[in-house]
Image (tube, rainbow, N blue to C red):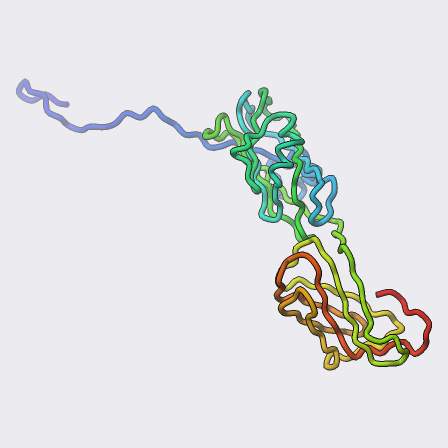
Length: 279
């Protein structure tokens, strides 16, 4: 205000603000050798995310994650783990073991792609933190996953640090429950129709492929004579042959798992009664 002729008049007004919102600190893989992991390509993060059984679609693996946070995580603070889309938590199993049994994971916050962990004692800044996650559904393919992200909290609202940003990939293929073939005729030298069947517990998706090799004793058909047809489980399939290698593309199916069968024609049986090699 200002005084004029003994009276005070308003000049301007304002609002006093004392609040301040800080930027979250950094959080990196425990084995990173760079200050900013991933920036220069030599951050050595592989050992910061370890899968005990890296087989596609396995359900019995323990996922071990190691990280270092820039700031301390207080007693009764939280660690939030966000999973990439290729990985899924089976929450009942997750809650019963690993870090959730050692510390605590609020069940109300557990989702297939997110886990909150309650910290029972202060973790000093820069200390290596190791969390073991049970009940993880491994990815169904060898394709590298997206990244896991970790955020630490003073409470469920106030972020302290965030980062990690490490992915992984599976290295062991899952197994078909069975693969079998049935010949329409067992007469040597005849053109034959074969029915092939698989049983799989790993879900199939549109445009997945399966390839197999016909035994050397069989004379394979040409592409024009292949006569590939769905027998069971498929609504639509596509088949190609190159030499003795048959490749099946699963286009549409009635269920993503279970029994599937298809047939190919004009495969000439061996010229003798000597047993053929395996498919």
